[in-house]
Image 1 (spheres, one colour):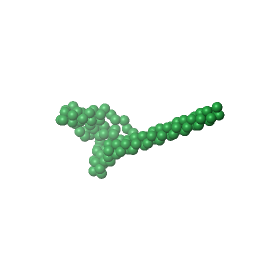
Image 2 (tube, helix red, strand yellow):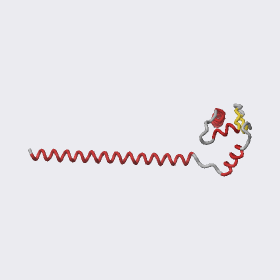
Image 3 (cartoon, rainbow, N blue to C red):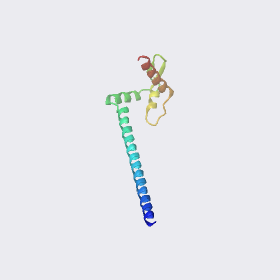
Image 4 (cartoon, one colour):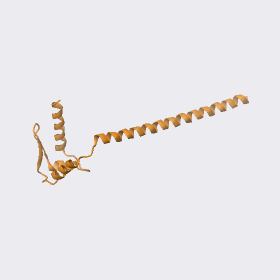
Length: 115
């Protein structure tokens, strides 16, 4: 019976070691997956959000200096006007207004119609 008890103890210890090793491997895999996801997200951000060129920044600065009610662009198909005050809502920490969103949706619709 001592041999059986010793065998049972060894079996239980081996089982515990296996379970600990499986848990360690699971945690390591989860960590690696999180790292991969974070790297992919960072790579996507670099692809989606390229910095504006200096010329573009200069145009934006010029437009920002215009009077708030000055119309910048009219979408012909939908008669949506975008004024300086509308474009100012594109700044950090600002709420977009409906005109900017409607204008953008009209541009997307145009692009879709031309395909």
